[in-house]
Length: 121
Length: 108
Image 1: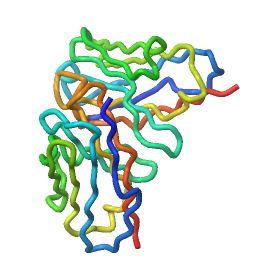
Image 2 (image 1 turned 90 degrees about the vertical axis):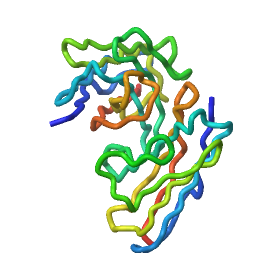
Image 3 (image 1 turned 60 degrees about the vertical axis):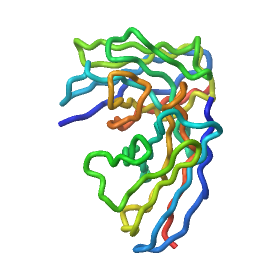
Image 4 (image 1 turned 120 degrees about the horizontal axis):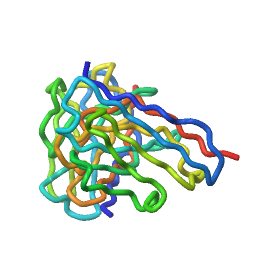
């Protein structure tokens, strides 16, 4: 089955860190750019970060630049998001999303179910 | 960044009616790189349309996309009960990619 499964979410205090993971299966992982897209409770979608198929090119939303780091391990069919210095406004459901292309900068043709990150004191 | 404004915010229609959703960009979208997604409550977004008018795999032909430049439209020709959901447009012509705020299609 073609799928993405996220993990690593949880409750963290402001200023804390979390590392999200996303495991891909059922498709050739290194044929695709990958992204993290988040959705705050009751709100819309916001692209957070993306990485090209080979991990060389990455991009970040201004709201997370300097605090979040995206990476991937194609040998393990996995995508990661290291989140540091977390803020209350980072509270959201974080989706892993597959680009329909080698670049992360594309439309998303496959989404995971998401992992919830809650930043609260 | 390119700001996408979707209208209306909420569309109240009956099954069988036609739905027309608008997505307007703050600047011209390169190569008409606009996608549309459907999201039902508690579910993950699903790709419907890409490059403004191409239907994604498995999407029924009652869904169609059109437009160019700054104005894009998603049309659902005849609403089925399963089509009542939130719809988002996305542009990926200019980095960073951005989403509209969504249009809710609700049962009248």
